[in-house]
Image 1 (cartoon, rainbow, N blue to C red):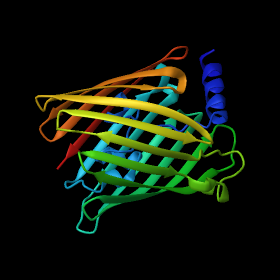
Image 2: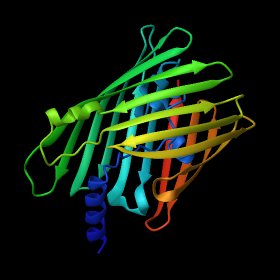
Image 3: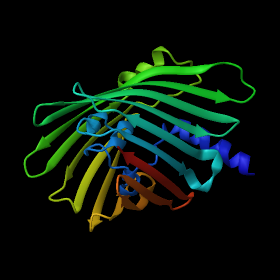
Length: 266
């Protein structure tokens, strides 16, 4: 029965064009991550890594609906230079009978006082047991981040624009085409409010998230997303040069999803 449920979920996910997200500190904010500066933006809007000034390494794990077969494991490393911020990412979704592996090379750069840009080249490999055919695709994603007065950030990100992955992918491998636009307001180091709209294969979804930091030690996050009416929550702990984050979201019918992420800056 468990394998049957996993099969049904994977089939439905393909039909609904889901984009699998890595667990990040933004996961507790309903994945509102397109209008922020953070090393974790290497997975969401690469323009957001452009102001990272220290070497950063991160790992994360997300268990979708409490099932190991639907787990997402991710890691990244980035190295700031005088010419910008290059980074490498790796994500693994699935289990031994079905899995997807995504390897990315990213680059973020600050252009002046207000404009930041980023780009990422992705290689996707999909494995299905008892099917020897290689399923792989190349595509890219890119984004911009604009810093406005009054501590307002506006972000735009495109993922696989124009379904460019179709040029290299076989028919059986599906890669979603997605767009995101977001705005965030952070009046001080304690409070953050952000809103985001995602367009995935022609369907729009809306999310709102907030974060509150107490004593530069604990960060509490929450969010709502109209896709499946999900409720999100998370808490992060700053430990010197590291941040440990736990996140949780609940689905009215399907169950709960848990995530953990760890990032160090050196």
